Length: 234
Image (cartoon, rainbow, N blue to C red):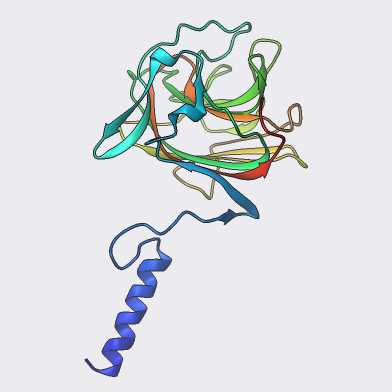
């Protein structure tokens, strides 16, 4: 091979790696640090389901889909919260964070309607004290927003949000970014440059993270959590 050919080959391989793919076609490793936050936890749900605590274990299972393990919320939780808030929740039970970036792939598996949703929970300090991002087909006072549950029925706190989110039938990459010094919360859906909703709130400065839905079904896979770890959760 000529010198020019070798150089061109090296450039091509470098471009593949820079774009997130190695020469073998496999994805590169998860970053050990993101926006100055260390990687605390990653899971494909193959062997660590014991680290998760659902509101109703009978509604959740780890299953396989297209050769990959997914954490599936497949049924309705027989759980009634003290205040009006989501029923289907599974919490990561041994990590609490303040500042964090949570990223996970979600596929909504329920029927299409205005409140068809998938939820991510954070700042969880108890059954009536937490935040959650409710990603739904159409936005209204109870849907497609960032909510605060503080010993009272959930309240939308988003300062910015879209009119709704199209789940379709595929997986989508969802990310939440939280900075406690400013109170800024951002939620991203596939596009990591432009959030679909944002809020500013400092009610709860740390807590557990979780997955779920208000009252629908969904599958979750390839979870990653970067953040500032707080005292071990009880």
